[in-house]
Amino acid sequence: MKIKWSYNPLKKCRNYDITILLVVLTLTLSAGTYYHDVIPTGPYQFTYPANFGNRINVPEDNPTTKQGVYLGRMLFYEPRLSANNTLSCANCHKQQLAFTDNRSFSVGVDQVETTRNSMSLANLLWTRKFFWDGRAASLEEQAAVPLTNPHEMGQSLEASVKKLKAKPQYSALFKAVYGDNAITGERICKAIAQFERTLISANSRYDQYLRKAYQPTAEELKGMDLFNTGPQPEKGIRGANCAHCHGGVKTYMELFHNNGLDSIPKDNGIEAITGLPGDRGRFKVPTLRNIALTAPYMHDGRFKTLDEVLDHYSDHVRQSESLSTVFRGESNEIGGKTLMLLPQEKKEIIAFLNMLTDKDFITNPEFSDPRLHPTKK
Amino acid sequence: MKKQFIIAFIFIISLATSITVQAQTTATVKITGEVTTPLNLALADLHQFAQTVVVRKDKDGKDHTYSGVMLSDILQKAGVVMNRESLTKYLLVDASDGYQIIFALAELDKSFTDRVIILADTVDGKPLALGDGPFRIIVQDEKKPARCIKQVTSMKVLFAK
Image 1 (cartoon, each protein chain N blue to C red):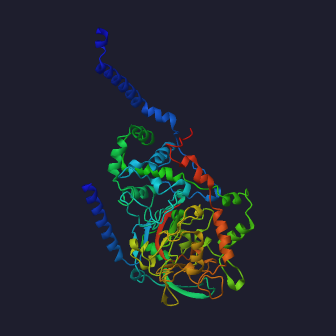
Image 2 (tube, one colour):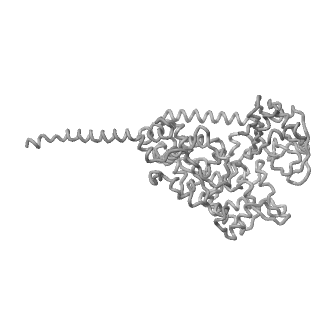
Image 3 (cartoon, one colour):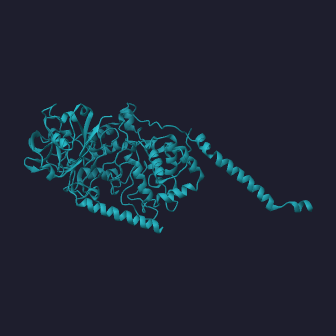
């Protein structure tokens, strides 16, 4: 009995406490080195085909490091960065959809829809103007907007900092990236930007064709030809002239055009920033990389399929004062007002567009949630 | 939460103000970079310079008469001195549709070439079409019209690094 009484449950508890305390202390002390041990560190080397060119856009004050990319990836998939802890960047930028969300407009923490379509995140390393209206000059600047917009993730950067501070692993990660463990809004955006720059799509069948590793079908080749050719009906040359704005191996030229969606647009695009009538209804000409995966299309997601998109450019371009000149009088028929492609030609162009789908890009574990797919050392 | 609303409110107000301010502006061309006096030229300012006429073919294959200001005159006004150092400088021209082209400064130097490059605002005596203007660069005698950049919004003098 005496022995039994000497067994004090409270005391035992205290022993547990001490053990837990010791474990926590050990973990905390080793946390800094722990992350150095498991995540790759050092300068990040971008890998891309030579024909992509080297006019890349990395701000001098945010050099890309392996640890920075890792932290950015953690944050990209971090729902604590949203006001109700349910949304991360990945909710509207899903890898399997080439980082889009299959919706015309996305739904934010307040259940209100965004005003424009979620953009694909591919080959941003070469991008210099961000958003549909090009208003942000860097990914760092861009990232802060969806994080804090009340109709997107809806949380101030200060609140995000507070939430991340409560998770000890972030303290160690920020230290590994920035040299000290201060967590700031600027550092959050910088890390996310670093990760986004690594999202390179360069192994579609089109890329394979360009490096002579894939022989396109006859339909794909015809589509490619139409894509790259401007129509000259008087010479009997048929074309869709897509490459005028979507040309080059990246199918992205950083242009902004009014492509005749409306005569009187609901969304004035760049005019809302510049106040210039020539900018009315003018939006970014997006990359066509993985375009078959990124429906619905246009800044307002009005077209559900590529067929609808081709029908628009072929037959339904709306006239207005600010309609870009490339859409004026370009036709496959002499005196025609629109492109007037044949149904077969539209199919061929879509066959080519499907060549731009990059399976490696949408399945690369390095771009996925690090909690599900840990980084290989 | 209340604080967030206040911040959001201030943000919206400042955004609205900036848009209103922008809405009152007219199209201009900004001249920046390696200059002593950055310029922001509206049509009226451009008309203060000596006007030069260039005749060249456009995409339609026909000759057109363009009138405007020599780029060298504009750069001089901005304080750009043409010297040995300017041989490693270039002018980056931006259009409102995102299109960009460059000229080496020597291409704009009268002591190097008689070929005239102007910032035009009229064609055949009329203002440029909305899709081309209000400002367009016209390069005399260049075979391709690709550097006759339309809807010019800015010109920046830079060093080759």
